Length: 511
Image (cartoon, rainbow, N blue to C red):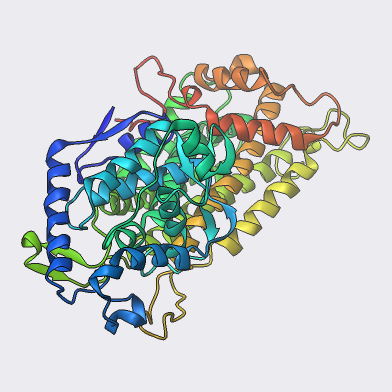
């Protein structure tokens, strides 16, 4: 079980909860901090102090005083009016991550919600009841208002949820489990929706998939190296140490590990003096993508443990400050950066695919066809990869440079961070399919060379893939193969952390 403290939540713990479906609870200390913060809110209401979002309206209505008897209605109206999400729902894993991150933020004790609200969020996680949250409609400041309003609706017994993989009305799911909905009290609605948890949850999901793809891309590239008789000298540790980027050094080391024992790689001058960049520069390009991942990871870890609503309560309520922690600019930048890193993994992969299928660039059968001319082989697989790479270029346009004022110009600069995170996730799905195409082509080419000459690790990877994708002996509907390979890459991890004789893992740094 993962125990939330309001701080220190890691990506590994998030993975265990979001993907591994591990249960979660809150520490007593963090619940005590939340309870003290709640007392401060109740005192503000009792003493009729003018505090934004507690005894005033929202946004441009921040100057409108709300009487004590109407503070609960204020919160209910807020959620109903702000639930303007549109489009397809976020993936269920992302919705689950939103619950986790929102609970963790509230446990910091700056938001003024009752512990019962936090415990309700944790109950939904543990029962696998996940809000249906539309993906579109957020400007990324004042946080993810529209998406998180759909999450808050569920606590009120309204909206829709995913229950055991099916979409149902929230009240029906609650009846099944005997759950009583909450009546949101002063500030609680605002505390639930005024934050960056939608963009951050999508960012976490995107990062976790991108990190795995980066590892997988190295094993796939290693098979391509063998299939094209790539020159192993370009991966010598000295050349990478000479440049000084640790990620580049580590990628080169992992490629050497993948290719250890191969009879298919060559040396400088044996067949050619040097390889094309898509082979020779794998450590430089993939290493740079790992630099992107490291940056994104750093920002996500901060945001996962941040207080991002408004106002925030300090010093037992003696200091209540309206600020802008809900502004998603840090995550917007990080997600736009992630888009570039993921898109480049696809871009260089597509160039390797071209070298595998183009008879002018290799000595393999044209387009890896069993009967060139009569059968087209992998010709159109390269087309498909090129199309995905081109689409990625469009999606990679930075969302963070855009801003449209809202709330009568009170909210006059916004981040568009949720758009950035959604597009990052789309790019990663496209990149996985490009890598799936490279994998299919690379193992086909490797079989022409002779699998007995492959390195032990690459041959083991080939055999795993061949268990569900047969060799190209006749033209068939390759769309099915691409989707099978992409699905396998999304689910499979063990094939890419197989230890070599020296005990080095494919996903670990090479010494």
